[in-house]
Image (tube, rainbow, N blue to C red; front, side, top):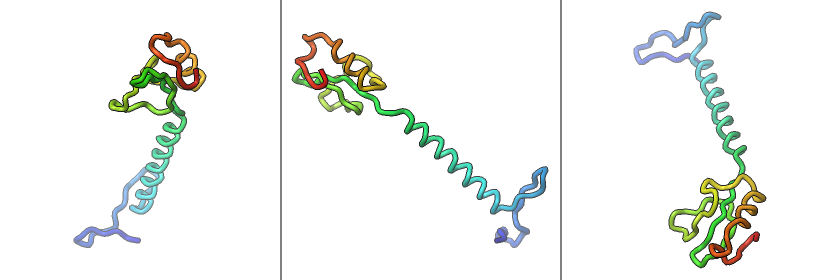
Length: 108
């Protein structure tokens, strides 16, 4: 496949120390590098793992949720505002909340 300009010039080529790369090889390299970058970003996102949040609802019941509550959800995050890495750590934080702030709840 030859790529020419609108005026019919010679095919595009990039000069490198080892020789020249055709336009097709250059595009293929770009696609491979882009795919590897996307794979790297996806792997990093998957490795982060779930976060657990200790919350109290408007009725005073505490619980643990696995996604960050929205601003208008009626849930207030207790303890670490950025969440806990594991369920066990969230359970320990839930048990540490004073009784006057929680009326019992899930995982307690």
